Amino acid sequence: MIYIQFLLLVVNAIMPMPNQIIYGYYTVRISNICQIKFFSQQEFPNHIIQLLLHYHQLITYDEDCDFEESIQNINIKVDGALKFEISLESNEQLYWVKTTKEEAYELNIDENLNVRIKTSNHWGLARALDTVNQLTINNQIENLPIYINDEPQYIHRGVMIDTARNFLPVKLIKRTIDALVINKLNVLHWHITDDESFPLLLTNYSQITNNSKFWKDGYFTKEDIQDIIEYASIRGVQIIPEIDTPAHIYSWGRSFELTQIIIACDSDIQQYGQLDPTLDFTYEVLKSVMQDLNDMFAKVQFIHFGGNEASISCFEQKPSIKEFMDQNGIKNYFDLQVYYIGVFKLFNKLTFQQITYFIKHLFLYRKRQKDIWKNQIKSQKKIIYWYNKQHQLPADQEDIIQWCGQSNELQDIKLKTNPIILSDYDLLSLDIGIGDSFGDPDDFYQSWKDVYSWVPKLAEDFNGQLLGAEALLWGYTNTRNTHFQKLFLRSSILGDILWNSNSKTSEQFWQFTQRLSEMEDRMNKYRFPVSPFTSGYCKSQTQVCFPYFYIIQQNQTGKT
Image (cartoon, rainbow, N blue to C red; front, side, top):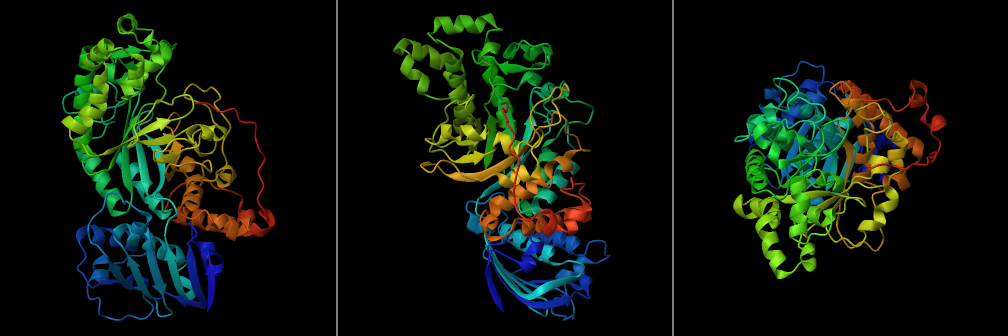
């Protein structure tokens, strides 16, 4: 028996790399693949049965196997079959996890194919079952007996998808969740709405949806939302919805009765807009939208309110705003944006009389994107905002900020003490490199080696909490036909880094590419049309093609 930390042999099949492995030398064939048995001292609740069904289908893929037999007659011993003994600390269904410990697991597989899993809850069970599935190749498992003790390094490991620029149907979103689980990614950040469309059917302002949807059925109902949340929860994925404001809301004003709350930004193509923060009616509409959002996503923990790219010049398009600023001593448009997002910093510049007027007319965005959210709607969900050097609207201490700037600008957040999610523009933007919505060039394409080169760290003197990271797939040129090619395998690499960044120093580069090759084969097996990372020759000759890691550095100027 050999003890190895982070590395080698059987783990060449596992991605992300487990933290600790002890393994042997036996290869055992699973001669009765359909005779899988799942056993626990406690009765399985429905959400765990659904999770076991999901992995039963993956392990027995392309076989005509009966899942009911796997959770019944469990005392019947069958040679050559996987026999799972599952020990959970809690059977409660979770929609998010608070610590990485809740995804940790211990896994033992002996020479008789007895599989023992010990973990906290069904999220940890999903990670353990995924590892067993990865070890099961061509109906056999190598290097038995195996012991794995595993836990993710970061709690937030995700991707963002965009259903506003091009609509993505429910079935595709569910398939995306399945793909995340295979890669031990646990967050689907869902950028639902934007200037282009608002594909979320609202209760009181359904015209926002109906006047901006791309086709008759191109929107999501409350039932769709709840279905997706349940589907994700069972598999150990949390949903984070995003409704971006105060910019990116042109779709809100395409009906006559709502045009007054929109400032249409001056451009050659009329498709960009911002909310007018000086009107009471703006907040009336906002409250209704936020109430719907809270009701639809009742079981999620986080809400993303965007907050980026509010254009200074856009406010100039509406004379009433300039007049309002002059009357109330608001000196610049940045201060107006700050007020909208809901921070106290602006008060230092105002007299008592100005503050009183300000609260009456504008500070209601603190009270109507925060106050409405926290006190009237009484939502307990934590708020996330975009943040970078160009759009650094201050956030309250309890807010989470999602960094979307360039690599060389990270020092701008080193003094922040907010929890932070990294979405490095230079390396984690999966849509760039093929042009924007109008066919104009945008930026350099980031290859899988670019993503591999990324390191999840901030300044050494950073005092905040680094939650993890997300890869971003904006929807400008993404549809159901390109979706998985753009997401994977680059998101697979991000998942590997966020689960265990130490793997880079404990394996050679060719060994990493061997694991990546196995992941490509695995995702192709399950009919995910992922983008290949290399040629067939190099997949079979990883030591020849990838003896060490190097990357050609590009002169990237970036964009925001």
